[in-house]
Length: 149
Image (cartoon, rainbow, N blue to C red; front, side, top):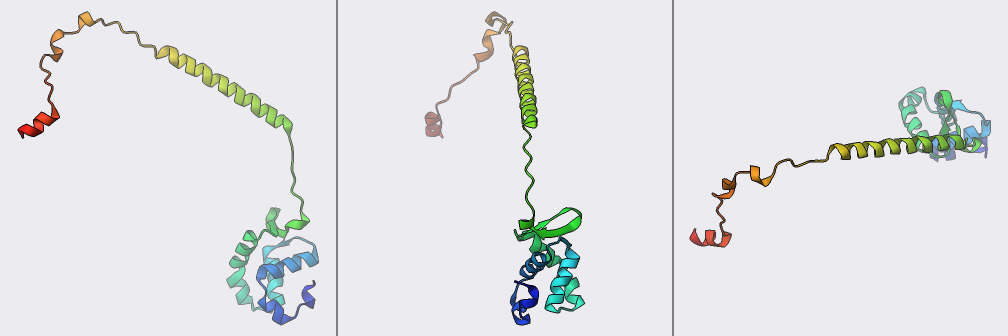
């Protein structure tokens, strides 16, 4: 469907992002957001003031609409025209696995060192403790205490 084939009345009922989709689909080239929204405004015959007031809303529309993609240098295009680049690099995975393995070994070594340092040797014998520490200890039954109150 071409933009020029759509009657003005129907264009006025369309969302800005739908009109932008038609424009990018027709022209088959990436555009800066200002240029794209200017074409949308021209198609709707909106005044310059509308362009200035609604450019931020138009940007938000494009960022949330999954049909559009923002490219380098602020250009916008249709996602369907761009294939995602998937790079499979097994070497990085192997390197990462080796690094993780080395880190785990370091942690294990540190844990062993800490365990060796944390060993507590009790050099005090019970003979060194005074016998009268518990002499003043009194055991109170809670039920008896409440009954006496």
